[in-house]
Amino acid sequence: MKSVLRVGNICSVNDVNKVRNVVSQNEGVVACYINKENKIVEIIYDNYLLKLDDIIESIESLGYFIE
Image (cartoon, rainbow, N blue to C red; front, side, top):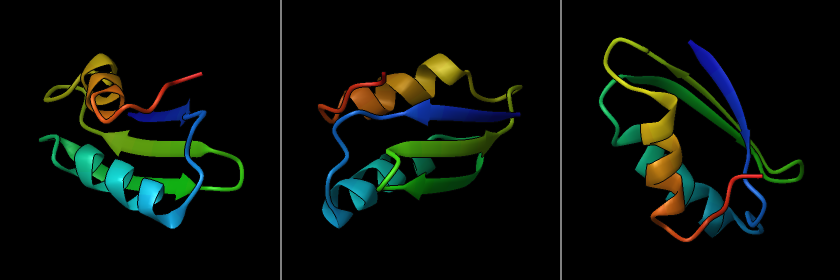
């Protein structure tokens, strides 16, 4: 499954790396692409192993918010 999230407070390369690392730690994530300028996170994952809510929760645990 592919999901696109808008993360409102991604501002730097450091933010991109933090989000990429936390997303990739979820079992079932196949790919993750982050566009810093548009604040978009595209995630391809196996929805049998992982729910979108789990991904969102992991991003929010770092202090980022999903718009």
